[in-house]
Length: 115
Length: 108
Image (cartoon, rainbow over all chains, first blue to last red; front, side, top):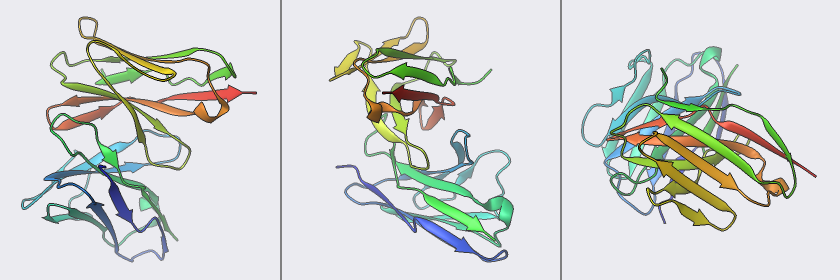
């Protein structure tokens, strides 16, 4: 149980393109999902906490207009990287948990490469 | 001070060795604790939750010392497939704090 699916797993696109990443909880409902970014050989960095039916909470230094988060249902959160540039190339991972104080379950991640 | 601190390693050990990872956390009110492993270019995967009484899963033993704000993971009889980065994760209410990870290389 507690499966989180993320799509797409790999994206390569031109600079200036907007890219949408989906995160789904397949067998549980998630009022909260988390979006992370990870650069090579670095730790996971929390970007934002996605809240179902309300605005996301962004971490300091993360541009909310650049990284649009929508959590329209209890099983789906989306992250849109708007007007992506090469410096946005990274590994983006979402997570959710199926119980209060329980562990996070991570999606497979999306490797984003902006040319 | 970071919320969660881990030795970054790498730890290079031979197959069959016992290896221990340690982690300290700064918030004494932290609620729950976990160990994850992350393989290169993959997402973190839950290895085990850490309970106050300590818990064991096969070759893996996790312990929590709330008084010292310290978490440990012990791997016995290490296998080549244990090579990965091990992340200590601490949950404070609705926020998770990650250690920087300790890299383990198990050599034949």
